[in-house]
Length: 137
Image (cartoon, rainbow, N blue to C red; front, top):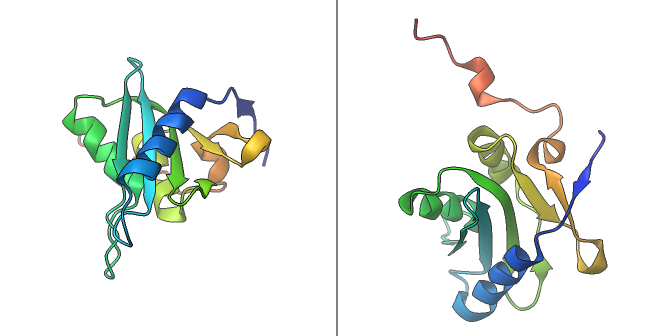
């Protein structure tokens, strides 16, 4: 796997960190995510933890972006509460992000080692949902 790093969107990381510090409360909301839309807007959200699973912050931000008319996301990052910093997406989130936004960049790493990588690089040998859809015609 060859991972090409892209410039890190520090404003996006700061937006997620701010939401994690000010909106995450208790065990129900422990992660915040921020996404940059193609038009420059930043959309933020928090996870909704529940013992049955519940959506991760990255999935909630995809829905929040759609609700705001931002259907083309370019970069995403998740940040943990209690100053945990940037947290990489789980496998389910990686797959959903790849399926919805195959060109998406995801911020990973920590401290001075933050980097933005293609979501495809986070999920090598991946199943691409669009590649397996039957033609309607």
